[in-house]
Length: 198
Image: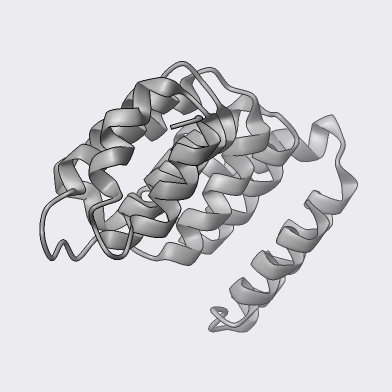
């Protein structure tokens, strides 16, 4: 967690706007470093307290998630679906370490929602990392939907191809075969099919 935590705290520090923000930020970091049950309880209270800035909730949820504290789940899922990719990436990292069985269902719901495709990159990658029962069906469904000419979401489609390659499930053969016909996906899809022995 150390490197990702430093990246998060460096980014958040640039968002601080007042001496009060700085004091709250330093208190959060002190709680994170303590890593005691009392400190985690205080971080968890921060997730449900009113009028807390997003950056404070993000730090608290990240620390709790990486510690396996399931109280972070709802906040991390909200951040996984956030409009800023950097926050989605942070949430995905923590969710991957949380160990909550609800995570795969939430990631699959976000990845397969056609109204949220613009924000689906990190849920797709998280599904591949989790290797859950929902992973392959969700990645196939998402990729099938994106196999249209000139889709603006080809990076999400590529992440689906890469995830299916990593998961190595033959249920993906027909979808990967179709993906191999798309110029931006062809190399990755062909490599995925080769791994499947096709």
